[in-house]
Structure formats: C-alpha cells, structure tokens
Length: 81
Picture 1 (spheres, rainbow, N blue to C red):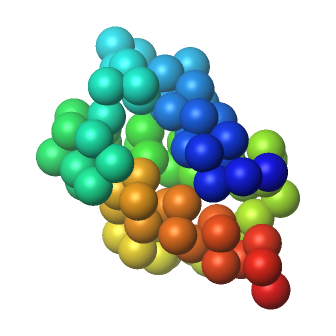
Picture 2 (picture 1 turned 90 degrees about the vertical axis):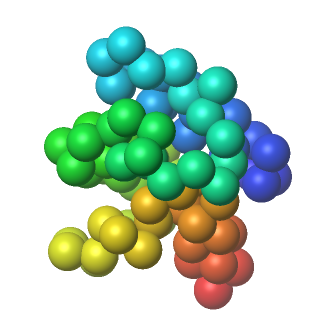
C-alpha cells in the first residue's frame, strides 16, 4: 500500500468513525485535537487503522500520532521494519 493509499484509508476511516467530521477536509499537519476530534475519537480511529493496516500502536502513546502526517510516518516506518 502506498503512502497516498494509506492516507486515503485514514481519511475514510476518520469520516466513517467520527460523527460530523470530514477526514477529507483535514489538513495533514493539523493536530487531530485542534481539528475537533477528542481523545475517544482518536482512540477509535487508531483501532480502525490498526485493523486495516496490521500496524499496532502502543497503549498510552496516542500523542505521538496526533496528526495525519505523524500517523502516516509511524505506519510507514512500522511497515518497513
């Protein structure tokens, strides 16, 4: 899966799982919390991303993936190992 494919997947998952939120309007470097998502929204999205990509996210480290860019970077790194 390319980075662009992964980004599209995450944007789709955000749109599907966060009420009233359009993941396609999210700026890549905007922090999820600043864009209007709460911590429960982020946890839900991370679980969905984990299921879709097979990449696991350590518990309690959600702040490391607080933007689309950081999340994509982590996934890319994890998939290359």
